[in-house]
Image (tube, rainbow, N blue to C red; front, side, top):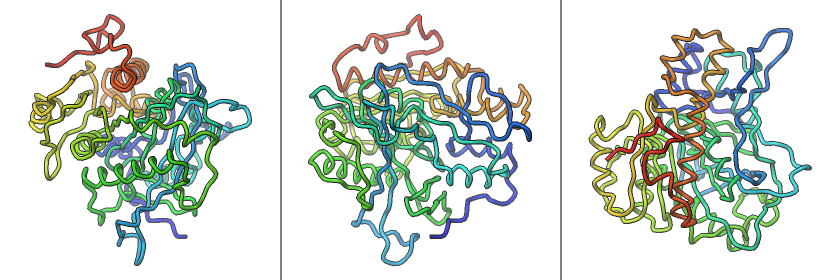
Length: 401
């Protein structure tokens, strides 16, 4: 099958990739090792890394190829329907025989690098903590489920640090690629990218997520929703607790989280990572279920739609914000872009201009701790102290009324 032409394949500079990433939500394809060095002609491509999760459990992951036959997809061709790639992350056992999954597929990585003017073979995608296809670890009680929706022009891996953190603490996390609004690869080798001809809105994301919820319900009932009948990890369907479902998203995905909660009672708790809350129609339904905002660029003070949305939260609600945080600071970019800076020789001043002054290691800890505390409180009914007020452990995190 042909590869879809990459968006912006002509004329985008390397630094242009970083600017575009921050503008539209693309996770720059550079995992960062704390001490990693730039690639050289002699050493070959660098295998970049992500920080490890802190939970007590090993992590497994598996992709699913889903087709929504209720939604024709003209952009894909006559007689084609909406196709989605998702990944399921979960606590795993007996992982030794199962390899670590990459942050992005090789073809998606090459497409993104090449579209930005990089040598597509210059670096190797980082490996995640997820062991591909490992059997599920659970002690008899089903596990809470959390869905993730990415930012515009991005991909389902853009907040892997948070995703694998949740999985390491006993959650099943389902990440969704919103096809034609970012980078995705299908099992037959097709690589899709953001398409200008595709009218993608936060409501498109919501329709995607609600369809994925239906497929997860089928999986929990004992069927395999993968259209290619790919093998599933042992114990996956039996591990899903559909009475405890949460959702979070970054940027456009944060807005989609609000919209999904307003239209689907299955989502019990929602978290937005700096979502602008702008859509047509707007997310104006009153919500009586827990919702938390982690704001940065789209604050209540700066974005009227965010302030308006906050007034519609009638149940448990919270708005926190890290000092010096930028739009991408709560996802992988804050950890990834410094490594990109080393690879391309970016100056310290330029780097600060892109990621601000929030230390990447602190951003990782914030991104691991606060989403976990939120879902622990509202899906497991435990803990919550971190969310009760400012913490000495996180002095940079403010509570916004």
